[in-house]
Image 1 (cartoon, rainbow, N blue to C red):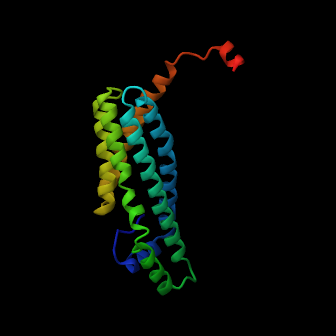
Image 2: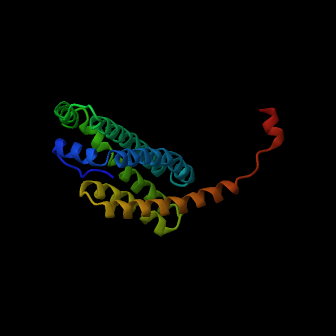
Image 3: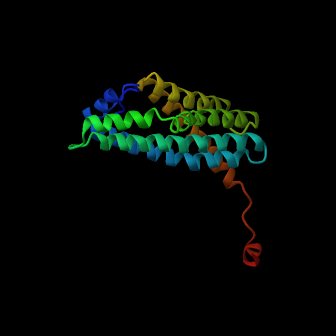
Length: 196
């Protein structure tokens, strides 16, 4: 349960305070999802490595930067969760969160979260051009990642769920393609392995 995006940090902390356990669960699930994106992206980068290396490097790099920024944002959510803990001074924590969220140092990090969807769009375009995955999966990957970003900004839980579902289905389909391609690799030569 994420509180709605708000420029009013007091309202934001009040939203966290209404359901702190749900908020923590949501944040921890977000961290797990971000961690799972890394091997998924490495698989897509591997799939494009020979046919569309430029798309592979640029898209994969942007997604990794976006995931890193999203991890910082999720970490800030864990700080918010502690700010509403029993015994915390609400006036002090609200003032602190206001300073954090409006600091110029944090702005580029929060904006960098959008690199996640841009990176997925670049990877999707490369995968489509290389004909490495079904066209619908490439479109679903780009559209799903974009919808997740839009869903957070609106804020709309329905749009986030739809975007997450599209992204998941696309990545699962592409994961099957990666696994099938890896199965077709020639077996390593036992003599070469011993010599190495």
